[in-house]
Length: 521
Image 1 (cartoon, rainbow, N blue to C red):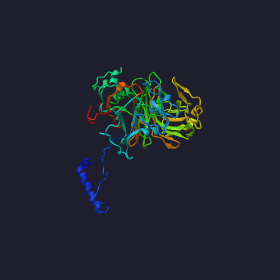
Image 2 (tube, rainbow, N blue to C red; image 1 turned 90 degrees about the horizontal axis):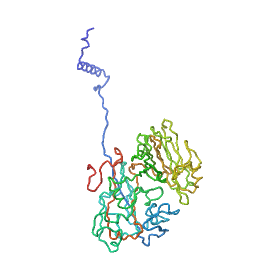
Image 3 (tube, one colour; image 1 turned 120 degrees about the vertical axis):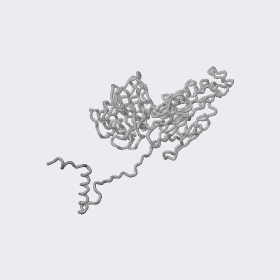
Image 4 (cartoon, rainbow, N blue to C red; image 1 turned 60 degrees about the horizontal axis):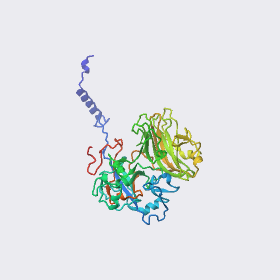
């Protein structure tokens, strides 16, 4: 057989197929369109997402007016001049004002006291985007005759529409200050060192005398429960911190745990708590907002990003119920594939006895890591563990945090502290003091079958309300050095999307009214 019989061009072959096709059509075996197909994907779109921060607020000011204590029992701090009380100085049932950690007065009904001292408010209608955008809003902290013993507070209600984002509180335009003349009593004060007409903030003592604090609030407008200030100190230093970079990220706190034992409460402070145990200045374990491993919704992911570390992190929610009234206190956990810690999760509980004493207890929980991943969510009932009526695999017994270390509780929290002790807050934690990869997911904290707030993450969820508070106070002292002083400052918030960012503030070195968000720093 000659090779020429196979020397057929592609064009001739297609022509031959075409002839066959015509013949077939003539025989009624098909249609006139052959070797043809159409698959259609209609109405394709690209729609940009949104990241818009809405801000509302409620303000309070106490100037010792006669109606402030209507319906409220008030106890004044009786310590030395210039000092304030601490949380340890409070009696059972009392709340410190302006903060538990630095109080001038203690009240038995903080909600009524705040109602008596409320000076302004703005709020949305419940739909995302209905809160004010705040741009160009007038001052919300405006006091023309501040005196020793005065204090005030503003709680900012925040909402991101619609994507998750990191949020910073800031002081975008710094501080302006003026001695505004020097009165005769002011000039005689040994702590007065500014020229009468000085506008140099360094000369204005009001910045040093006024104290301030910033914290992530649960929306009740006062610092209580497991809440701890993210910033605290004189107004000068607090504003300097808020004016640095993008400001202060308000999702949680960083604790230098190297060389010393951190305060027990820091493990259970509502929000994200990161511990630097190795002293390298990095916080290797963080709490991300990620897609649920089972493909639904978003959950909190405690992770060291695949690296071994001795650092630690917790994510904590407020609870506020006595042990005796807890039928169930649960959350779900899912062990990540890369977790090398001994257990997939640990639970931390802040307990307050009826006499006001506070304790932090913790224990391991969940299935021990054996090099495999359990590909389903597990539910942990901490309520059963508190009373001893149930059991969880892998428990090592309750431990109590002390100034010198962690010691065995010797029983359950209920047997140790009583059924009337209150569970103030609950935290899920992960990390490896000996070096491990942290990789654990947690979600659905629930009290007596009712949902608590979602586990906080370093990234705020979209279309979820959260709050941040700024408080100021003037300690009771002679105060002559602050007479006629004036201080003005801005308070603001900056946000950027979580996706593709690491929360370090990727956009501007500093956010000011004059700097566009797209301007390179």
